[in-house]
Image (cartoon, rainbow, N blue to C red; front, side):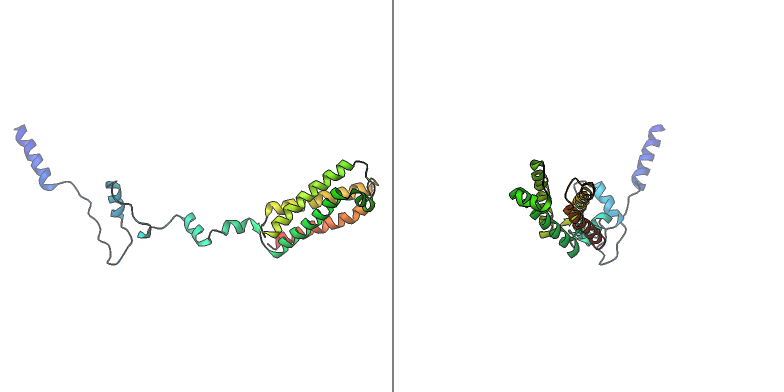
Length: 198
């Protein structure tokens, strides 16, 4: 009796079968993949992946990058406007001229700026100012004035202006450095205006 019941139940399963997922028909001419396509991809790991042109939307980040273009990140971090480039070229040229002057002809440099006790210190400052000027000139020439270049230009100008004012007011250096402080302050203001107009 038990064997007959098992055979009958097995025959019932064979006739009814298990529920099978049927693919939902897609509209004619539509290239958009249906939900069943994704299920079939999971059921058949050896099946070919869907092509990129099948209509599946890209992630939002990829779509944004495709719309903005490859130069969008570069434009966000660079100031290629004429003002920023001009300030970089002017400050870089000024620094290179004054720095090389202190390195090449210290006598005429001290004749204009006053006598110096530590000649090695004058040459050290001249070398550092020359390097800063070369960096600014390079950035301005290539029209790639980044925020780092902006920080370098403003920082160097404000540092030299502060030293000029403090030590010239105390009588430790010639008052001709007050004129340099005015120039340095003008360069810092020019950088700030260029930052707003980028």
